Image (cartoon, rainbow, N blue to C red):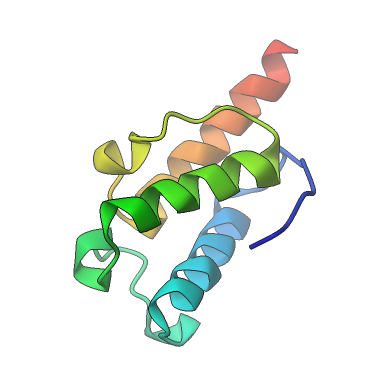
Length: 94
């Protein structure tokens, strides 16, 4: 997860793929076994893992994201959709 690309123009689908791969790496699961609509808690991710995912997203996109955002968007699909929108708004505001 050491991707220092700083490209805020990722689509929700691209972010979903990235998050799925990251969750798979953290859990030891195969990416195809990750249900993008399953709550992070059901994927055996604890709060530290989820915050680490958010920090990695910040590094990847070069934007600030609230560390607790995954509680409001608790699945891969919901979080990737929200982050794509946030990144788009951040780019538009610059």
